[in-house]
Length: 264
Image (cartoon, rainbow, N blue to C red; front, side):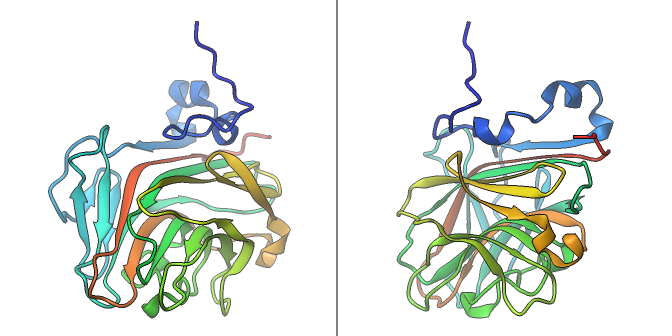
């Protein structure tokens, strides 16, 4: 009999045990009305550049979305159309409210791949309030995310290349995002990385890269101990100069949360 060791980071291409070890899959199966659980492996086929894919809406400026035919088990590629400030994002419906001591845990992880990190581009992988989940979710020229509630991972441009992947948060209206981990990961050309988060329902959001904890956020650092607006899954890329094809490949996205306070 195979036994899963939840105390390890896990294999490179599967959801990370350290993030998902306490996700109550048995309870989700028995009473799905109390939870949200999304596992999107992009294995269902897709028409290029359609408005929706499964549970996600495609938004952006000249947004392109295509299947990667030589990747197993379902991979899509998001890109613009080689124009300055072209963008391509996937967004979900609103799923979660992050508030200290809400007794509602959440889990999030995505496996992504930046094809050429030397290009002038920016990426976002995390949870954003609905009004930020637009073609302009990353500001023009890739300087930052726009001024909306956000928590997750961000890589912005240095006006030449895509910079390090940071773990960040932002309360809507802030002048800029706040780093939790300024250099959470250094991306490598055409190499997958798993970026994840877990909230304990109390006070701590833990950030993970490739299944290993890289830092934590104390939710009382947020304005009024919360992100005031509901949050959507928001993943994508923005071209910051034009003239070359910037591509973010997405292998899978997983998200779960408790809709009803669990008491944990």
